[in-house]
Length: 115
Image (cartoon, rainbow, N blue to C red; front, side, top):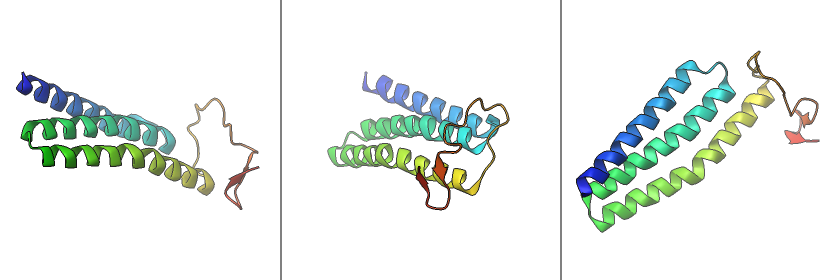
């Protein structure tokens, strides 16, 4: 039964990591690429780490795997936010199919803050 759970976690992790890689190649601008890579790869890596922690069955290894997963879940959204803000401040163009730019006219580029 444990082997089935380990295999399921590793397959789910590999699937979401593959989806993140495809998203990096297929998405048209940096903001969409960042969204795909942050969300899908985080889920894929957490599932893979959980499978590895379950596979080894050692409490110390499982605790380190859990700590790594929590660290990733906490830091990935913050890193994505900072990368997105830096890209927007640098004037990286949005995809032409973007419907709205909610920050247009509301973002002070000199100070890096919302008005």
